[in-house]
Length: 416
Image 1 (cartoon, rainbow, N blue to C red):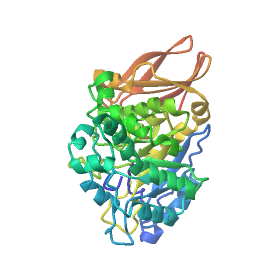
Image 2 (cartoon, helix red, strand yellow):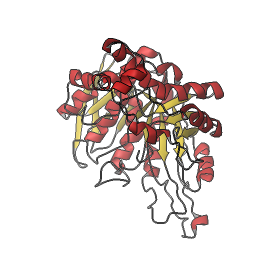
Image 3 (cartoon, rainbow, N blue to C red):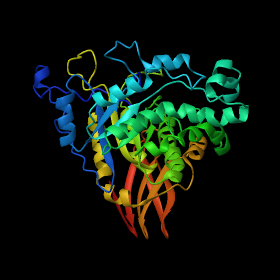
């Protein structure tokens, strides 16, 4: 999220119709209002030079507010007591917290009064190799363990405290505020670890995610799936769907708390060829729609924009497309919110076979909301796929890389 990242871009700084200065810019003109129902939510997590003005517009257009905290930073001290910097040297030793850990974290929490939901941004390196850590005499000593089995049992549990303690302290200070964690996840963000892999391979490479998370879970009110796009290819649709779906599936064992997908309308800067470029319009549409059909109950729009005083940054040309795509979902949100997601074939399997992504939410008998996209085909191609809604067969047509959304009740179909 810091260097990247949950995050997207320059909020459509269009000039007024006859041009004009920065003060005359009207980035919200003609932008639709999104009214989510059924327990679905869209959250605003944008910064930028005119953040207060745009925050008010965002709320007026249907967004709820969110508050992000760079939990381990030390801005007042000019980063001399930055916990994240310290953590780099403590990579294999979770017992080696800096002496200022609690003081810095509590100070940062108290200084960041929450508006709406609150989330910690904690992205520190940690090792899940207990065997290698056991070989370090200082780590063994600090752990207090007398044997490797004892050490191994406590190793990830101790790492989890770097994340759980800030959450715990936040809930003490702001008991009425929903709290979440960006960084580690029940299923950590993954692209190549899912693409072309089997279920056992995916579970194997993510085995410690859930083990670490078990010690964190009680302190969060919602889950986060980071789905910033890396590539302008069909794979990105399945990457987004898979990361939301895998978190949604794994968190069901802990209860029924919602999964929120963190999004950015620019390509992740880990891709040196595409970094910070606005994502392509067809992928913007998918990003706005696919998460709701992968288990998400909310979307968090992240970014440093709008930056009205940065003429060197091109404005979001795709924000209008994003909002209009969300508006399509909002018309069905009451049904989506009370329906049940059906995953006939896991996303990773569809991905590896280069098949369309088709998902349905069952609302009642012969009553379904269906989403379908075939990003493998060209923009001028049209294909269809067969599915069912209750006892009725259903043929769904997909044009180019656009998302098909329909509500099917018995023999009647309505498109959105």
